[in-house]
Length: 223
Ligand code: SAH
Ligand code: DHB
Ligand code: MG
Image (cartoon, helix red, strand yellow):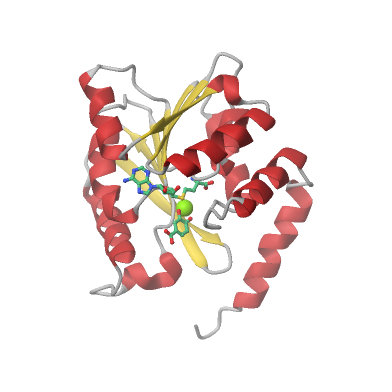
């Protein structure tokens, strides 16, 4: 990039983290356990976790749906934002990831408010729609990027006016701006961004997120 100081951007991210995200035993343990179990290191950053927490808390969310659990790092942030009668339902394809997540959620003291459902997210979502489950207050999409457009369509069937829909990894270091992105994930993210921008039921923005690279979180509200 021309005049954007990437190193400075990363330093700023760390500066914010030092100010607002003091060491947190349960969250550090979560990442250590995930690493020890050989899970990929693709959890949200501490600052993005805090942002998820704040958005959930500001909106007074009680029912949260997460698509893509991994080791339950973002799940822990979301669960902590809820009142004691709140609930997170989190969907995960991989049995091993779900097992690690359940242990981590237990250790973090939030297992009583979180339900991990194992299976393909699209199947779990369709089952919820068929059962007419109550609408969610906040939905966080963070699983396979090729499924995002479908997840949005299904999420909207589990939403009400005012539901917040968030999705991670929508900038992919700028690769979504290519006319024809080379990888499936960037194509999936690009398709999601375009679906958001043209969806008449949603008001949306993408917030750039600094990690090792530049990524982005979409924030949408259902009209
Ligand atoms: N939200 C987590 C990171 C999730 S990583 C955090 O920030 O801590 C993406 C997860 O989605 C992985 O655990 C992966 O196994 C899962 N996943 C991939 N494809 C999926 C599918 N079709 N259905 C459900 N989960 C899927
Ligand atoms: C990937 C997935 C994520 O959810 C993320 O935050 C970063 C990377 C990935 O699949 O590469
Ligand atoms: Mg992600």
